[in-house]
Length: 232
Length: 204
Image 1 (cartoon, each protein chain N blue to C red):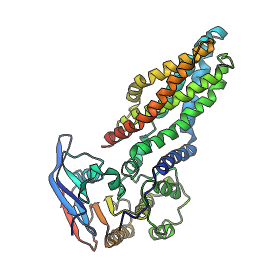
Image 2 (cartoon, helix red, strand yellow; image 1 turned 90 degrees about the vertical axis):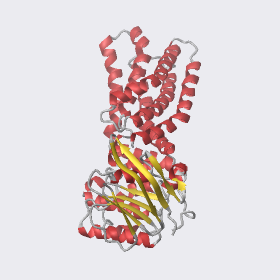
Image 3 (cartoon, each protein chain N blue to C red; image 1 turned 180 degrees about the vertical axis):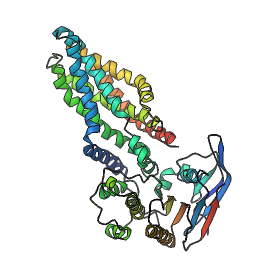
């Protein structure tokens, strides 16, 4: 048996296959995907009911509420990122594959973002209406959420990987991720507020983009290392 | 014959317990390494250490003379791992599971249908795995092992959940794999009847 002349699968095929498998699993279990989305929608619609219908107040608090809800919804969905793989042994299979582990971790995170982050972005305009957000601000908010959720999924994958071996690691996961997620929250919410106040907001967008790129380039390696440690 | 997979002076400590100390072995092409011992004696830990999933206290594992930690991907590309938890997704069917597997390691040019027929799972292709019995799921995991084009099989308790005929089949498969020049490390409780050179390590 000669292993040299065998064609090993390429790196990109590992990335896509992992992402595709997780998307397929999400498709077969839509409840897991809809839960965080439902949570996001609930928080955002209940808030105006609780604080009252004053347009001024809602416009003022809208960006903050939307962003906090998005952050919490993402945290909620992160817990299960590696948990099922850990329980059914597929994490072991990922660990002993010919593919570099960061690539597989990135594939899983990509699927996570597509099923939890991206839907939030698309639902947010409808929820923004309850906060009387001006139409010109809505695209800005969507852009901040788009960039922000990318960072949150990537950073969250580190926490999810670190806590995967612990039972009920949800609280710990949130504690680990919150310091890293704080800049995303501050930048996101404040950028939308600035846009709503007709101020210059582009700095916030650039900073969010930079944060997303930094997460994209560093998080997969940290996640892979964390997975190896947790799975010992 | 020179050993393709070898280990020297392995020591593993889990918590307060020393599972084994100064353990070594050498395994060449066509040979079977059998790990025996009672429950909890460290068979699975040793298997995981060989697969590179557990870090050892001392010693190292060599693949073709190079430490596996220095060539992790090349080594992982040369092995298949079958453990108690099959690593298959219950929500997906057999074909979807094996399709994903094809992106994780090189696939042999064996005919899939033939492999399925041999394992007796050719009629289960479209069913989600969670609806299959534990033994049938194990057979799907065996199909994954057969379809991977790798020299080294790491089998941790491969007979779990299998019926008598299935257990014999596993032994025949291992035999064929070894006859074709493969290597196999197996942890097992039952008597093994394999026509190949066997090295046995009994863990205390």
